[in-house]
Image 1 (cartoon, helix red, strand yellow):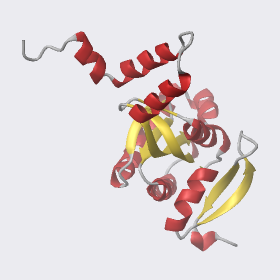
Image 2: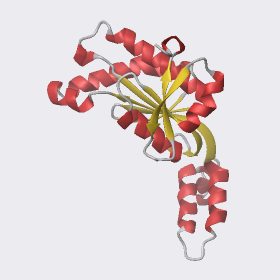
Image 3: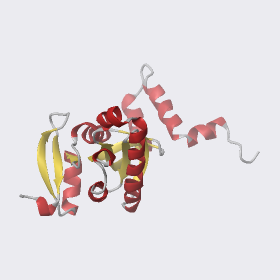
Image 4: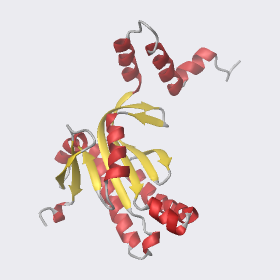
Length: 216
């Protein structure tokens, strides 16, 4: 009957189902792990720039003004930021509390988007009370990830961008992983400051510095 899918057809169409079927095969005794890993990366491996945004002061403001007040701040941040993401061809993969997980094909587009978002927040905040301000923090990574449909993305650079955006970056900071900095810098006029190691001691973290502030 037209419109009905067999169980096999449904299994082939579902990215998440296919992934976990392969993971189940990988967990079996005598599994050819290397071969299965290649199949997984052939199916789901893609090169993306990953951005995590976060709003500074969440716990402090919730304790002082209540969760409903902060939900309004989150709502206002989405009105400010998401049109800019669209302008820069970013994909919104997930909203987690006051954080956004975004994907960009090119790392320089992620950086340009972050700069525009920061500028928009600075302008917005000028006419707002301190507790109403959108205090943006950004972390950017770049590299091969496993992208599962339009709902999930996993990988080393995803973890790093999350750590930088949610835990490391201070208000108005845009931090990049080493891979993101190297991939983006040849396309940008802006500078980068080495701010030290990331949570992996072999990797460096860089702060984006707009050109007119370099050396000042």
